[in-house]
Image (cartoon, rainbow, N blue to C red; front, side, top):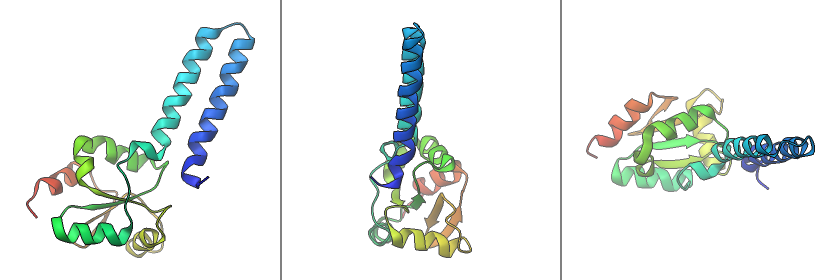
Length: 145
């Protein structure tokens, strides 16, 4: 199991334990509500929320061709999730690189952030921007290549 799935699995296990305790106490409605809450939290923290990631080298090559931004992210990052949600459907047009799965992507992020793996780091036209405003990223998507 990759570390990207550790938090979602832990949330599911904790939710199951809490729900089982509620059922044992005779409150199945509360158990169902709590289990649903934990499942939603696990889903939001999982890599499934994000479009399919590519490698850093492939994302850089694609960005050079189509001019779209490259977003370096990692599962569990609330700022990455905020960017993903605020981009809406436009998130599919961005090249996503999961730095936990791609060592080259992690190296790009460290080089841009003084050795830190601070995400989201968005690269537009070869220039990195750490945790930019989602409105600015949407603006970059609407510009011609």
